[in-house]
Length: 354
Image 1 (spheres, rainbow, N blue to C red):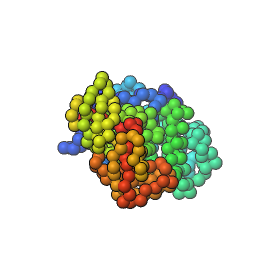
Image 2: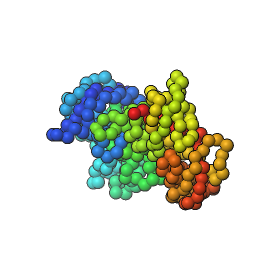
Image 3: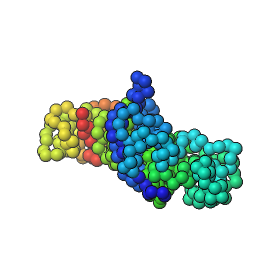
Image 4: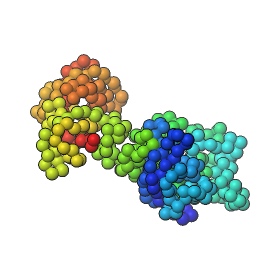
C-alpha cells in the first residue's frame, strides 16, 4: 500500500441538507489498521458519515482528518480512499479484469501495467481464473469480491464498505464477512464498514460506533457495547436486551445490590444511585427450569415458543415483565402455556446509565 493504513478522525462534524441535520456534531477516531463499523437503524446518519469520509459529501461544519491530514475541503479524488458500494457498481459490459483495472487506467496507468495490478488483486480475493468472465456470469459473492479487488487496486489508505452484505443470502453473508475481515488483517488495512446488522458488526469489528438520530449513541469494542451498554437505545439495539425496571438498594464502592422481580443481584454500579434503576438482561442470560431451583428465581409462564435448530426462543410473562429468552438447549423445550422458574446467573445483566 502506498503510505500504509491511515487513521480517520472526525472533529465535531455536522452535515446539513437544508433544514435536515443528517450528521450532528459527530467526533471519533479510527486507529490505522483497524476495522470500525458504523452501526445503526436506517436514517441514523451512518451512510452519510461514510460518504463524508469518502468526500462524496462535504461537511457543513467541523473537521475531517485522514492520516492526520485535514481533508475537510478536499474532493473524493484527493483523499486516497476507496469505496465498495452496496450495489457493487460493476460495469456490465466489461470483463472482471477490465472492471478491476478501471481505476488505474482512468488515472493514466498504461493498460498492461493496470492489468498486472488488477490480476494481483484478483488473486488476493480468490478470483484467479475469472478474469475473462462478465459480471453477469458471477454469483453475488463473486461480484462482491470483484468490487473489493477494484477498490484495492488503487492501494487506498482507507477502504470503505457501504452495507456490503445486504444483497447476499445468509450463508454467503457469513463467508464474505469473514473474507473481508481476513483480508483487512492480512493487508493491515483501515476499513470503515456500514451496516444495520448487529451480528455482522459484532463479528467483524475492532470497534463499533453506534449511531442514533444523527449522533453517536456509544463507541467501543463489540464486547463493551454488548456487556456495558451506555444507554437504553444501545442495550435494545444490540442483541435484543430485555430492558426492565429494578431497585438499587445498596452501594458498595463500584458495586451495587439490585433487586428485580424478587431476585437480588450484585452488579457493576456504573454511576447509579440508590432507588429505581433500569437493567438490561441479555436473552441468553435468563435460565428457565421446570422445577424451582436452589438459587433465587421468579415464576413465569411461556407465551410463545419457537424452535430454531440450535436454540429455542421464548416469550415469557413474569413479574419482571414480558421477557425474550434464548435457550441453547433445544432438547429440553417448553411448550406454550408451561409454568417455569426464571433465574439469573449475573453475567449478561447490566445497569443501564440513565
